[in-house]
Image (tube, rainbow, N blue to C red; front, side, top):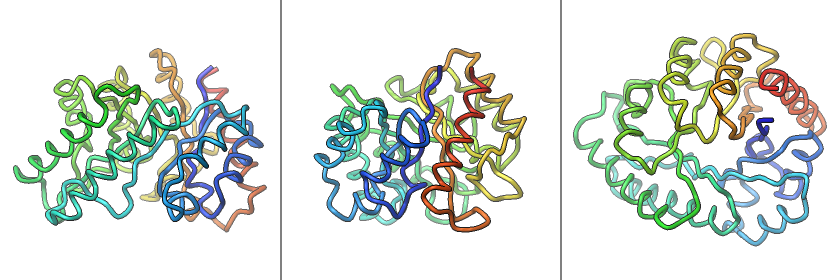
Length: 273
């Protein structure tokens, strides 16, 4: 059965142990741990604390890492921002190796100005890829590039861009974010599955409705069919529930978050059975 994960950022305000407790209570199989999870990030990324949480929660045997992205952009016109972005992406690969996480998801970056990317932006992107390639060399960690929402300045926001990159960079894997694609159109999501499904190592699962991203699935039949197609294509990596709690109707208690994840996981398991 395909494992079901949760993003640690759904539990943004909680310490690491409580995040693991909650995911375990929801009956999930693993966590995609964002390094920017505040209690972890602000303590200086203590890998020992994360390893201890893994050891003390044997019912959560799997962990993926999401590289820092919130204030960063590896294609930034500002050289300091671009350098910091490359450095933190490499650090994420290093930490994943330390805690035994097999996959790190990274974002591609974007042109700083809200204009179509130009040659200089792609040169900065190439430098970013070189840093990631070197960080992953000799490591057990796979680096997976995530598709982003197709805005005017986005990079790797279409299936054709993603396929070109994956064909050129044989070491690179792919994380599919359903909501990012759905926010453009259901057809774009379907094309991503058809075009890049062979390189999937992670799927971020949530819904987009009327321009609002990362919503719960609530039994959405279209997403259900997409998940069936992904599973039918032989995918056996995690389905990672990446839900933005700030986009919900009200602030959820910890127990409500656990209940929401449990219900979402039940739907995913029915779809991929």
